[in-house]
Image (cartoon, rainbow, N blue to C red; front, side, top):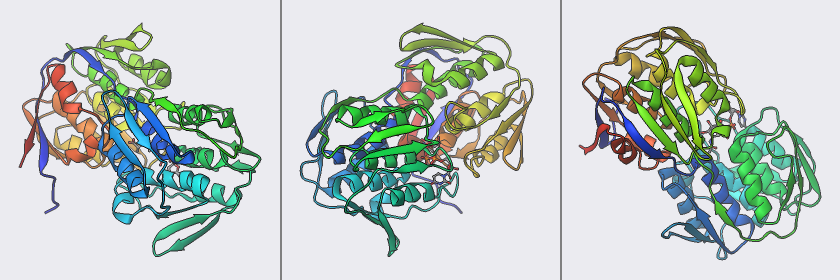
Length: 424
Ligand code: EPZ
């Protein structure tokens, strides 16, 4: 029998949710920012860093490499003056895929890095060939030694890199290494995600010369020396998207979401309006969301930014179980990102899988049932399903959810959700 984790969420569904919820800083912006502190020894103040498991894991790796860190009242303080290692331990690195970001940061900072070759994860094989090809072009020698990737370069030299695919962390790794390389690096077909733009801004606040971030081609003029900086993490657009969907999930729900940047969510918001969810901007960083009319089916196709984010795919699928008609959800980024569908069908959904498409037939009432999270976003989707299901849903493997959602249960309870954490 497959083991499930000790802790679980017990949810009584069907209760209307109302009130104000504040979005935390973005996990996928904080992780590269933490790695980037290696590029200039010294003290950094990072505000709005979400206290989620993935962040703590990155900090433990930084500590292993010789840094110190502490969460103070309103900021995370990191000091990288004492970095004295360039090899990341297997036990820590394998807990988080983003440990691959230490490759570019250490290569830039120390001219060498050793990181365990990341295996696949629940949502797909996730190779890192594009990261390595780019580093090789910058002049790094790459070897595999006892399962560890070793990258080494006496002098990183600027060059032109054309990415086969606009990979987020590959672009971030190359941005960090190129920021301290000799000469200019041009990254073509770069990722345009807000988190990539944010990393470029962080590196620029450390003294790097970068332009074109957020566009297909990024230009980086390498600098010998960078300096520490004070950083404020951008809002988490995937967490915001999760609460936007929650706002439209039940007829009586009405949420005000704070610390949300809607310009990061143009495609998901236009999809929500198409489905029948009312989203209104109420301030520079806030919006109101509620059900406008009965929900209707639609087609969702995931793509790199500014396309529909793959991380919101499972969450929107829950909403589409409550929409009249047949919806199609096409997943183009990760080959194994529909595992949650089997759990939703256990709750009464009617979803068929054909290759990379989920065919969602709605409206299907959902019934409470024991379900297990298979990855971070799948877990959040099952919590939302439990909140609109009849009776009680028990979600297992909640550690996966806490990797990327800060105080998720408390935030939901603040909106009137009947959700409790139980430990076996
Ligand atoms: C980032 O992962 C995010 N993680 C993911 O969020 C997100 O799903 C993904 O981007 C896409 O938006 C972080 O930022 C820490 P990719 P990343 O490289 O960089 C293929 C979450 O839930 N590829 O852009 O690993 C790859 O297999 C997580 O918060 C190669 O083939 O994603 C995939 O099909 C999950 N070779 C596609 O590109 C490579 O060298 C996109 O991956 C690199 C990627």
